[in-house]
Length: 205
Length: 121
Image (tube, rainbow over all chains, first blue to last red; front, side):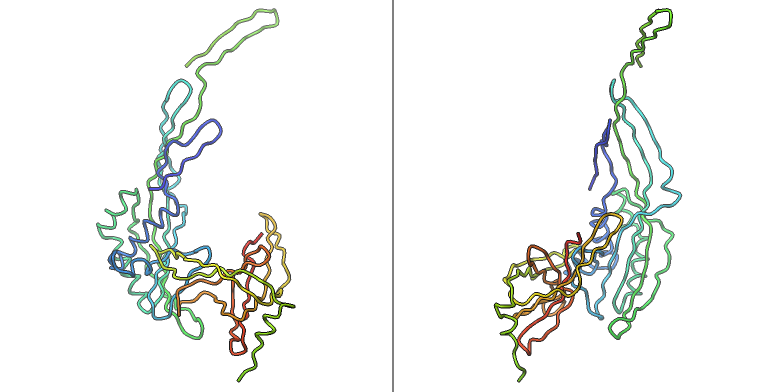
C-alpha cells in the first residue's frame, strides 16, 4: 500500500506506513460496496459507491437511483497526540528514530436515493462485523466501534424532495515511521587560554 | 417553421474556430469517473459573457471569466442521458473553458454555451 518517503536537511524518512488519501479511497470504496451487499463482479460495484470531489466533475444520478458518495479526511482527537519514540545508532554518523502513533480518519458518507436511510443503517451495522476488521487490519486500520446514528435530511432540488442521509465514522490508523538523521562521530575542541596554553581535546561517542 | 440563424452563427465575419474536447464512453471504475475524450473542431461566434475578473486570494491572483460559444452543432454539459458524459471543454485562443450551461436553440439552427475559464490563474 502507499508509502510516503521524503528527505529533509540532515536526514530522510526511511519508511512510513502512513496511507495517502488515494490509498484510503482505494481501501474504502470496495469495503463500503461490500457493506451494501454488492458483490465485486456486479457492475454496480464500480458506481454505487463514489469518491467525492472529482476534479472535473462527473455525471450525477437520477432521483430514483441509490448512490453513496464518501470522502476521507483526517481529524484530531486525544489519541493522535501521543507518540512512541525509540532511538538507536545506525552507524557512527547516523541515528535512526522510530515513531509509532495513531492517526485519526473520519470517513464521511452521503447517501442519496429512495433507500438511502436503510442503506446507511446497513453500512452502520456491517462496520461492526468481524470481516470488516479482518479486511482493514492488514492496512493498520481499525474502525472505532462507537458509531453515531445516520442523519436523514431530504433536500429540495429541482422541485422535488430528494432523500439524503449523512453518516460518518472514525477509523484509527496505526502509523510506523522510521527516520534517519545525521550525527557527529567526534568533535575536536581546542582550548586556548590567555597565557598561551593550548589544549587539544577530541570527544568521541 | 422557425427561422434558422445558423448562417449568422457561421458567418466568417463573426465566427471563429475553437476545439471541442468531448467526453464520451466514460464509465465509473472503483468509484472514480474515468473519461474517454475525443477532439472535435468547433466553429461559431465567441463572445465574452462577463468581465475577466481578478480575485486576489492570499495564495496569489486568480483570473476567472466566462464566454459564450455559439455552434450550429450540439454542445453538451454534463449529462446522464442519452450518454454518460461530463461537460465539453472548449479550447479557444490557447485557453480552456468548461461548459456550465447550454441553451438549446436548435430549432433556430444553433446552440449557445456558457463556459468558464478553467485555468483559474
